[in-house]
Length: 393
Image 1 (tube, rainbow, N blue to C red):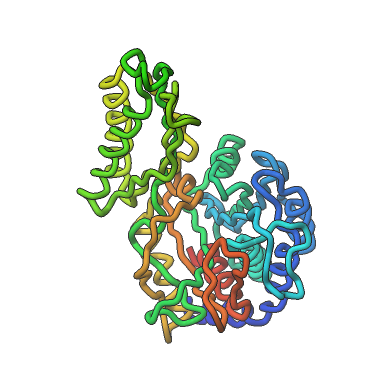
Image 2: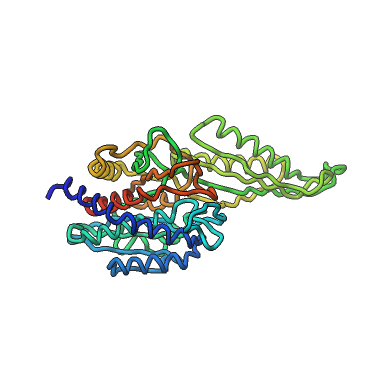
C-alpha cells in the first residue's frame, strides 16, 4: 500500500471524526483551569483516552499532567506529541453556546490543542496495525506563564520510554493574505522566542531631599540602568529588552531606600538571547555600583527559544505536502516574539512545531482576547497531520 494512499485514507478518516474533535474542544472550552490546577481537565482527558481504548495512561505527572502511550508493532523509537491544556484568568465575552462556565477562558486555544491531540489518538487507534513506533502523548498544564513543561520533565515525561522526536501545534488566527483557513503553517526557524522576564530591585539609603547628600539614591541607579538597557534593543532589532515597570518611593520630597524596575528580554536566537541576559546583568550591577547601591535580580520567566530540528521539520513538511497537495505546507511569514513552553521539550529531543490557521469569519480577535474564537471546521486537519507524523514517521 503506497504512502500516498495511506495518507489519503487517514485524511478521509479525520474528516469523518471532525464532529467528535469539535465536541472535545467544546467540552474543554467550558471548563478552563489555570496553571497546574487542571483537575477536571485531567479527569476528562483520562476518561476520553480510556473510551478510545488507550490502556497505558499515567495521571498526575508533574501535578495534573497526563501521559498516554500507544505501543507500535516494532518499537525501538518513541514519537512525542505534546498538547497544552490550561486556560487563562480572563472572563469570556463571546456569545458561544458552549462558553466558559467558571470565569476563566481558553483564550489561547489550548482547548483546541487538547482536542486535536485526542483526535490524533483516535485516528492512530483506528490504524494501530500500521503504527510502527511507540507514540507518547503529553498533555501539559501550566503553559501560560511557563513552568509546566519543566515540572513534567522533572517527573519523567521524556523518559520511560525516552522520546526520540517530538512535535506540537498551536492554533493561529492572525489575518494574513498568504494564509487560507485550514492551512498548516510551518517554519524551519524558531517559532517562539526565548523569554527572560525580571524584576531588579536597587537598594540604597533613604533620606529627605534637603539632606540628599546623606542618601544613597536607588532611583538614580535604576534610571541609569533603564537608559543603558534601552540601548540594547535600539542597536539590535533581533533583541527586545523592554522595561515595563519602574517603581520607587511614595513622596516627592523623600529619596526612597529602594527602587524596582521590571521588564522582558526576548530573542529567537539562543546565542543573542543569552548574550542579552548577560549584558542586562552587567548593566544593573554596574549601575548599582556607580551610586553605591546593591541590586538583586528576580527571574519571573526564564524560557528558552524554540529549537526546530531541520530533519524533523522536513519530514513533517513532506507529510503535510502529501496530505494536502493543493496548498501543501505553507510558510509562516509572521513570526512574533511570543513564548511557548514547548520550547523546553524542543531542547531535549529533535523537534518541530506548526500552526493551524483557523481564523473564524468576522472581526479579528487575537490570542488572549476575551472574544477569541476559532473556526472549528478545520480542526480535524491538525489531528490528521499529528496522526500521520506518528504513523508514517
